[in-house]
Amino acid sequence: MRRLADELAIRAPSLYKHLQGRSALELALAEIGLDEIGQALHAAVAGATSDPVGDLLGVYRTVGRANRELYRMITSGSFPRAGLLPGLEAWAGEPFFLVMGEPSLAQALWSFAHGTLLLELDRRFLDGSDLDRTWLAGVAVFGAARSARVDPPTA
Image (spheres, one colour):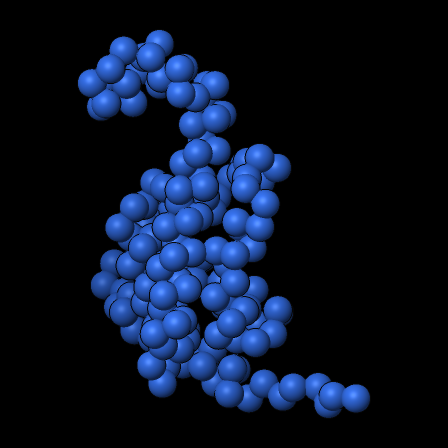
């Protein structure tokens, strides 16, 4: 809190006029992060080209790399889900479903994106790895899964 106050050029006790402590700050940041990524992903889906999986993954990677610590906060470890604005988390992740059209495929796509991005942010891939090709491989695999998906018959 003291470091934040220093960044804002105010005294640390003044923060408590606006927030009820560190947990309130974390919740506010989580909501900002989810809104930011949700806005970007929804825009990617709305403006999708003939490669909606590639568009979605490209934006996801860009947003996560642009604000690494906020990304980690909203996707890793403990998360203040109970205090979030109702529906925010589901709305932020909805573009994965909109692109894939099926919940399990949407979760698998998000798992690929999240895991690959965390490994990239943490520099866990071997030296010399071509991460652009890794992302493109994911686009190809999930694009094929999306194309091959067969809708259940309607009654």
